Image (cartoon, rainbow, N blue to C red; front, top):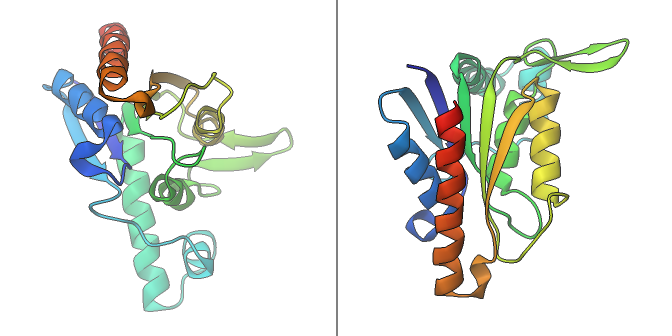
Length: 194
């Protein structure tokens, strides 16, 4: 049995194709310890100057202390996970702001990464990530969602990252069904190898 952290970030709830893929993956992972964090149903605060002071400086105010407690909770969930399952739909060519806020709260110097003479080094090594991405059009692997997710996960030390795409969902119901079926096959292949 392994520990799985699931991040949902779609604003479309039951109409979300990435949420459908996340739910399918959760169903296939039954029997593991699964923690689900829905970043839309339970949104994180916007990462602003107060949040930055809270997680990178010396929190003084009650608000800063609460934000640090939240960040510590998110980091603890992440550290405890063996595998991450991340729903990362493409909105306007990039990830949802809800997911970006999550990474802002967990990217912490000397906690999840450190600076070295050779550049930043991630401290969360040995974890796997499965990124489930639903997109309206057709994109190659150099799209901004893929680039950002590889970069931010690598930044904190998670380099074993696999992507599953449901592409072309903006082309109508038949395209959605075809994209979901193709994505589920890929999910099955990834989970078989875990």
